[in-house]
Length: 604
Image 1 (cartoon, rainbow, N blue to C red):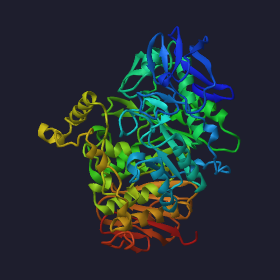
Image 2 (image 1 turned 120 degrees about the vertical axis):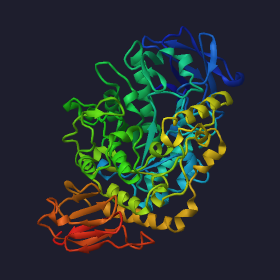
Image 3 (image 1 turned 135 degrees about the vertical axis):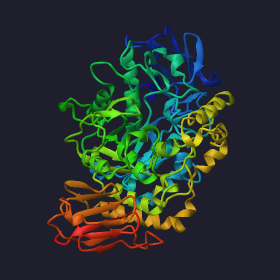
């Protein structure tokens, strides 16, 4: 039995988590049938059958005479998060990609996208129309930002309140299923970003139906923490596990990205993440691949270590140190969490070697030691990027990395990212250096919206560029429709230079990536360049800053080999319209500006 509404031969069975309630009734919308009283079990769940009800049935929930409220486990909210819930029968959808079994973690290349701004339509159907582009690009996994329904018509998705319901502004549940099915037919995996650490501020009816869902024993950046270790926490954990299984079973997602797991505060003997991982494994059919990836700033190795090694057993982890070090090197950022990074190739080499930089060292930004030792963890378990939704959208002006740096440096960073043994992630539009920003946008009711706008601008008061209040007023208003529209990709750019050249580079690098295998080794060459060897026969020479010669043959990882065959240069005219060729003479590469070479051993 799962939470929410389940269609059965004799009607619809309901399951509501309300441990503090005495009475729970299902209230048909607009009097379309009798109310149904649910029976309580010892775990705090109320269940019952609405005889004769079927798919399409609309309802709300009354708790101890209060409400009625939408169902927190509703499968669809066609009139928005405050409206009636609608019964959905997922078994009626006809899947076509029935032979699909998923993708191995070692083969994953993520492409992160936001449904509302990815396509001109801003819908699941619109995203489906662009899948051919992703297949041709060479990525292997689409990662969709949260789609759990939220108030208003636009949102990043992290203000979701209907955790089981795809946002109605993107389409109906079957539209999302069609998107996943179409991706699978193209042999593209699909991951979904899910948020279990908090709910949005508007439409959070879980607080009314089940106050025990949250606890004041722990605090998060969003207020009260989800109750994972107090009274009735077993039911809360079951609700969240069911939510994860819902996306995997009813929509056939190939994996989940778990948002901000450091905010899932849990002092119980068995961590919630371990329980979730076990439940997903148990529910995954033999021969299928389903992966769980956490976002967690703690650099906590236990997340991806196996249960046998005392870990939680997740498959991957966003490892932000790579992004932060690269950005410090190529863009010079030195405020906020960038204070913890020197912008030095030696540190970048350490990240590529181990997976992250902070393994217990003191963090000036956090004010305490950060990180654990990741020794022995396979590189594929670390997800790295040079841009993602946070690192762009949490900037005041939503500017992408390539908006503020030399295109040559962007090409070099891209070459290193897509050659690294870690699992790379691209953010939508990155593959053609999109001109559009990705701004923070919301569509809350007027009172809350005003607070969001004020808070957004106040957030940047400590940064040098926004110390002047007049300057902060120029930060785009999250509530303005224009802020949302500016964030939408312009697909006409992919046919235009210099965007087309950047797209050609990404396609070539991703095609080369498929040929890379074996152990890796890495060395810095001064403070500005990194040498990365993949297997025994491929060497990446990446200068992220400045000009000069790199004698790669003098480094241990290249010594004794003849890396003479050039597989790729980021200064090839096909990728750099203003090409400044990188001169290769024997074991010396001379750069006039940042760039990268990918070389093969003559004997390889």
